[in-house]
Length: 73
Image (tube, rainbow, N blue to C red; front, side):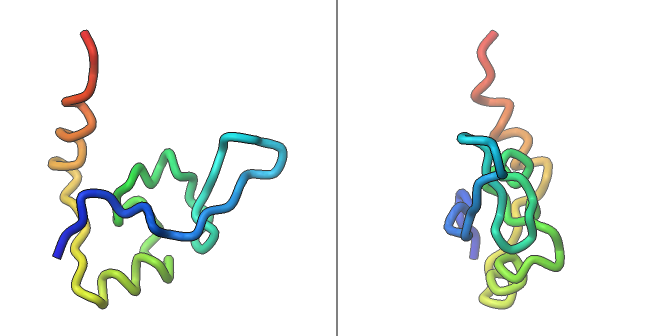
């Protein structure tokens, strides 16, 4: 199974930043995660639980292509 975006993980704010968040479990910044399951650390319990449930990470190439399609010239 695949989801278009993996954004249902617990998040927390960076101390002293009003618009900067990270995964509450693996502490990776949300801008690095960018909605991708593989954006979480391999040891992240969110990622592990979803992979055990049968969810598959996006391949980096497909995720990158999706990101560049929104760019404006």
